[in-house]
Image (cartoon, rainbow, N blue to C red; front, top):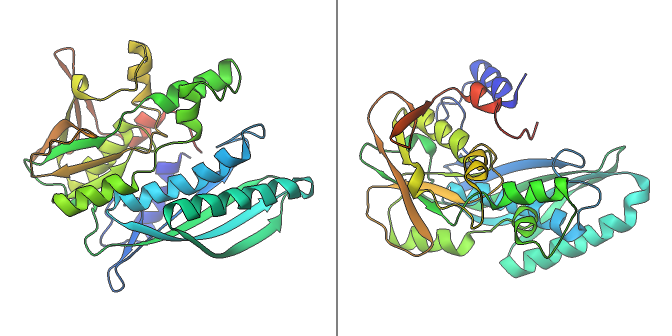
Length: 302
């Protein structure tokens, strides 16, 4: 079974009234204004043994920070669960040196966790943050405009470069894959200046993530292919393929306001209508509404 299939099965048995289908990037505890998220990264699935240890530390925190940010939260604390083979002990010390460096840079705190010997190296991160007004996916509204921070596709090309050639730390695509952006300042700016109805981070691919938003909000989401800000230097084939890749960790959000900022691009709009994603490309409209079908085209984190 795919990840989305298992999630749908779980939700059918354990219904959460504020998540109807696929949920949000983090859980919102309204009584405490807390948002919480968790991600697990496994060696051989999400990263390789030859990746720089600082990149593994960085990305394992960044993907969780992105979940909090995409729900309009302010990340604050981490709990770390790490399993590792006995011959990885020096690597684990280096991992924590990098964790504390990253946390100091972004004013975040590690408040606990657990370590265990394991036949495979894995990292489980829980991130806790705060928000009084979460950007829940279900809140996208009719006539909202859809925006995206930064650009997408760099991580996809970087992964290809690593797999097809070698780990070149002077290659900007490789750097984009190993060290994705952390949009803390950008989200703070957006929250202070604009009203946001719904948000999601681009971790599973722009297509799949926007279908999730469409299904949760029960809206039709339209995006213009020519408006999508792709990473520089991608071929036409790489651009389209990157829509199903993910791991860009940019923030996509909807608002009823016109926003003109250098780091934010308008890529589409939202309307009442049959829930799904409507991609306008080459004078055609390609409709996506089935997560399981999309997963057959995308890179699997599963």
